[in-house]
Image (cartoon, rainbow, N blue to C red):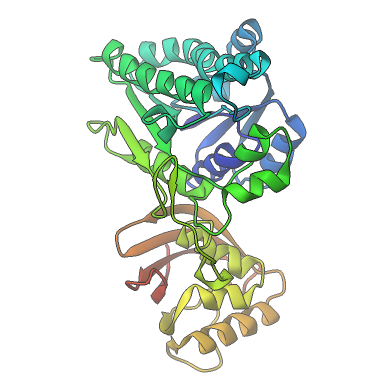
Length: 370
């Protein structure tokens, strides 16, 4: 599978690239900041093709996508993620340059990229367009005027694509997130980090990985199923302007990654406190994560024992690394398949992480894949 992602250098685009890479897709990553793309690509276990591109430039978009090399030419999934907001002023005080940047990126850029990619999908009779919109496209908010209008346009274009592509076999999805902790507010406020930080203060926004997981789920559905639109909101947000805020201790904050990837990341970072925090106090673990039996045979019970087991394993195998191959999240379980490197016996394992009602791991079972 070849996935093309715009705005891939940070935020939702970067998280989406990681999610698809961890599930084996080859990636075409598009952004203006090529150095960031190079840094991201170096961390991904799949083939990538990088394009330094401003999607507001119609002819540059057409030329760049017409020149895709053969291994990346047949794009299966297009994620129209590139977008931004500028300013938070009443309409009569707005800056015309900000308006043009939002309209040119959020609407015209989406159209230019889609126009370049879609004919190939139609010719092949398969493909999936994922448009990243916003709750702002459903419900305008004070001083959001032009940004809200551009996201309403994305929502309308998503429906128009569905109608135009009926019978072609191509799926079209709009993911409309609420508040997401990314660089979005910093861009909106022209680099004012202090003001941007207050947007997410004392509340629990979505993470970029939450949105990426929703995108991956939509694309992973059977070909007969088209999730046309998902309004994805934080539990602490009921509308663009209705946000529940209160002091939040760090331990009450959810990990930014999906559970399976958070589990792997804690192992790879040797962050045993973080690993323990992902588990219930009375959690149960079975199976050798490093492919090597522990000195004490049998399962490992309890958060403290699991932390001790992880310390023992990583001390014994200093180069141990668990490389994700695929992930899936269900109602009560997360499943992650990974490749062991630097253990007693390299190979592929699958971990089934069963979650408690509180969202933490209550039982982890690791199996050898043959």
